[in-house]
Image 1 (spheres, rainbow, N blue to C red):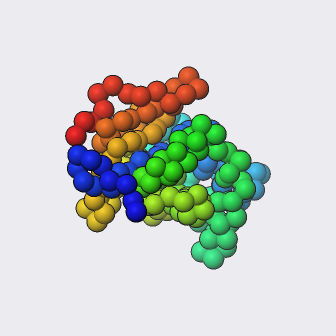
Image 2: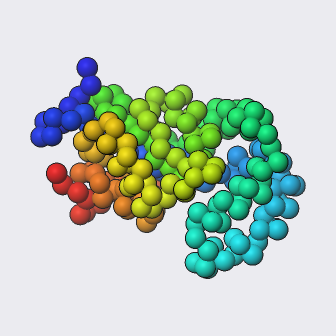
Length: 206
């Protein structure tokens, strides 16, 4: 039987960012390297350098820069082949990027019976398969064609999930300022800082 929060009566949930939180680094570029090879990826990045520089300077939004990158790198790969690449990447290659401390937190919450939800701006294409392998209750991530699941978009997507499956958001984990809107939903919010998860003051209290 699933645990329930004593105050709300709802099953408790823990939200996890992926890149930099459960993983030690970005997961997208290694996937793109696997999908199109190092020489082609380097050529694509060179062609996109004006867009990527504009993004770095704050002149182009995160979602637009990312969409251009994905279109350039993955646009010529058919759907079946892309699915096979994603399934393969969701195994040992993605596991090799994992942060042990993040996975320890995940396993603790799972042992408590908490619903663990992956919430990431990285592509659902490979994260859904990885999340299934690691026992997540639900995965919220970016589609190749839809909105980038970043910043406030994470909050909107979590709200849609909660409307279908009400839970008490007891915990949330992230590693950057872009995760702060998500962390504000939780009673206990943690940022990866200085080699550990640091609880944030001012998190939501129900």
